[in-house]
Amino acid sequence: MADRLQTILGHIANRDRITCQGHPVSGHASTYRYTLEKSKRKLTDEQRKFYEENGFLVIKNLVDKSDLEKYRQRFEQICRQEVKVPGMTIMRDVSIVKSEFVPDQKAVTKIQTWHTDDVLWEYCCHPKIVDYVECFLGEDVLAMHTMLINKPPDPGKLSSRHPMHQDLYYFSFRPVDRIVCAWTAMEKINRDNGCLVVLPGTHKGELLQHDYPEWEGGVNKMYHGVRDYNPNMPRVHLEMEAGDTVFFHPLLIHGSGANRTKGFRKAISCHYCTGHCNFVNLKGTLQQTIEDEVLELAEKRTGIPKDQIRYEDIWKFRSRVVKGKASFHDD
Ligand SMILES: O=C(O)CCC(=O)C(=O)O
Image (cartoon, rainbow, N blue to C red; front, side):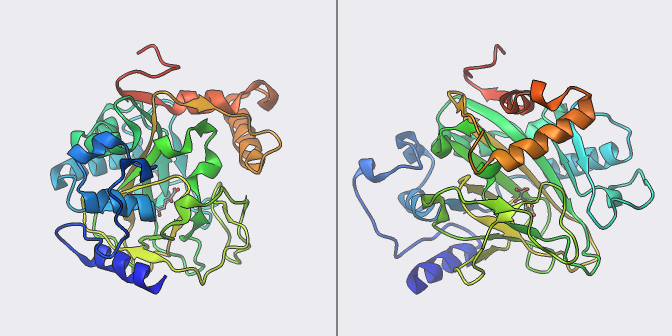
């Protein structure tokens, strides 16, 4: 395990290219599960094996600063309420949620479900991102979940942390190995302002039970974490420069640290899924808790009784075709 951690740290430290020397090398394509054969066009053998082994891959300097600036400006317009995005959710940190309403980015910690906004949507369709996404999903690509996270300066209660979790916990679409998240740093992100933390190799495990963590300083809504998380498991802090992008598997256990600076830490992300996905029933599974919570919120927002809303339809609503065909979209 120590060797593997060393390898991963080498991968993160390297500014120019991905290195992953020391990983077991197999010449048989049949040993690949998480990347597709066609990824050979895009990924080096090292990169491909790195993702297979660890469940994530950082690509340095993938998105231009000029694009990031466009997304930042759009976020600010949305916060100032100059632009309204139908269906989008705006979230506030637990520590400021009860304070006076201010139409300013300082009050907003996350916007999500903004796939109908043409400017932010450019991120989901960014050719350099989609090129990598196809290595994991194939040519039919759906954007399923869009977020811009504006992690606030921690108020001293550590509420700006994001507990360690697996994204699949929130999803009712499958197959699991044909889902990938692209997460791009919109500025320098390091341990001071709360970088992502990942547990390499955990994508090979099961979906685990999640709950709200018992944090004294409070926990943000929907920020569930892995129950009985063992903080001694080997983990890696992904320190990234603006434009660096990490692709990761939906079972990879990850979270992010507190923002101990005075600035807001921004990242933009999209979860993609193959257009040939299917939906599973979560009733009676360990995901039912989150389904119930999301449906309750949907009832509050729409006035439609929650027993008349299907979780599957919420995900369909959040999705948009990036390229190719999708089993449940006509566009
Ligand atoms: O950007 C972050 O701090 C973590 C985001 C994350 O893991 C999530 O929203 O699922």
